[in-house]
Image 1 (cartoon, rainbow, N blue to C red):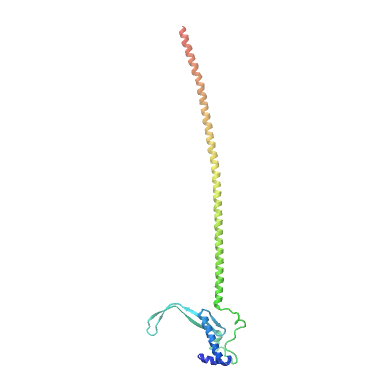
Image 2 (image 1 turned 30 degrees about the vertical axis):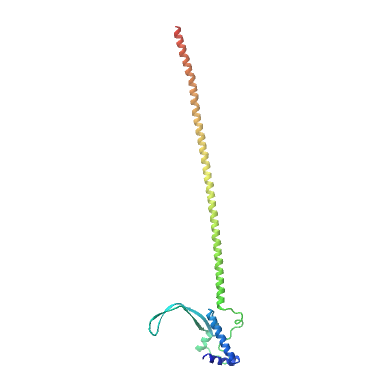
Length: 220
């Protein structure tokens, strides 16, 4: 069946050949445009159309057998629905007075969102979650740095106080030693001066005695 035969098959059901041709063109155009833009077109009971990316690869020319490199490309793909597969395989019989493809559930044709928009929303949610997690991690790191800085400052202050306490007793001990040494030196110097002072009068008395002896000798 080609396109013209398809139009003839549905002409009686849609009110005429022209209306059928317009309907077929509109459906095919909508499918092609959606697949080209990367959206997935899914028809319940019939199948789905989607765009598939093929990476660059090597293929073999069937005529010459030569190995040829094929560039990266995108191709359309159709996957038949389970209802379509069941009818083709014969596990289910075609209905005589009803459509072969089951009608879509109520509400699914209005207000529905495409797969692409759903994927975009999911990606946006993940991105927002990642940003929030990154902000929390940054805040935790900043808090940890501040806490570490405070602990380091407290340790330095404690060390300074300990050093000051050790230095103060050392200074006092040195001052006490210096004072004690000065007192000891002063005590030693004082007796020496007294002894010298006592010896001086003895010399004078000896001189007087010698002078008296000389005078007595002269008189005789």
